[in-house]
Length: 106
Image (cartoon, rainbow, N blue to C red; front, side):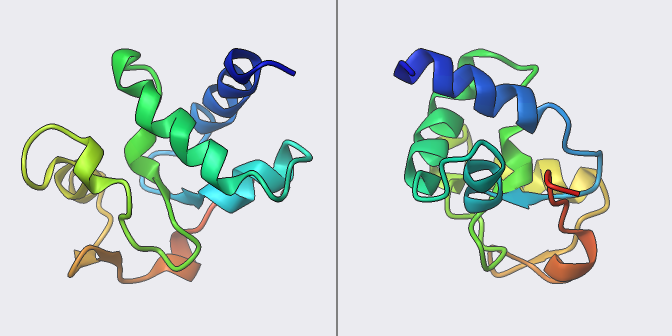
């Protein structure tokens, strides 16, 4: 599968993340049958900013930390987008991560 094909599959899953919920790079990779490709999911999220239909702000690391925040315009745009959806973020970490985690495998 080409990188472009993988990225499109990642975007398709990311678009399904419900409003006010988050998932992780690893959960998306596992869903796609590429469990060791969490970093590549991260690359896809970094490249997704040209397509505003991909809610990249809803994808965080496995601990709920906004590791991709420096790829967003502005100082705290990723956090602001999440907070606009009712997600509580403290010190660049989702405070109730387990409660709002969306698993694409469910």
